[in-house]
Length: 230
Image (cartoon, rainbow, N blue to C red; front, side):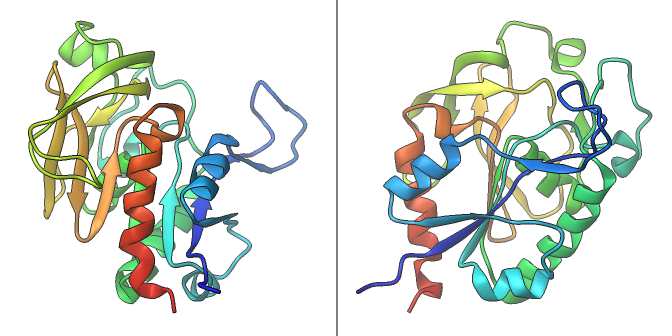
């Protein structure tokens, strides 16, 4: 029997101080959509935890997905936090992801960054972010809790150059200055970067597990991890 590729998913972190909990108990959480979509395309998804040694993660996983989440602390890319940045992912997540990305690079393990995950990759490699899209580009395209069209200027995980897709969008921030080595592969009508490749990894600003692109994008990412499966 052929072994299914194991994909580790970095979840959102909660330090026990959010509106939902406020009890001081740390939690990890993740939309179940990720599991359903990945299982349907032939992968075995597992949730990753900072309690796992990163080398154990590399030995276990054929690929890594950095899921969506709250905002990256602007101090991590040299900016002052503005009022519209209300909730940050805990520093523990950012610091652990730094170790994880470095370990993936050393081992040649591919990463797919979703929403926050794409922004996180850009910041890791030296880029920065647009802290609040409406302040910088306006609201001609609704990016938070809406669907909109994205246009591909290069091939990307099973989607062909020159094509367009309607996607599920849940973000108010975006990639601004690209990190060295990043290539834009898709944009929205307002110019917001919607997908990129960077140093052998993939980033996408929308949530493919919540729209019709998911089965194709995740299957293509699983196939890109297959070389690590024996």
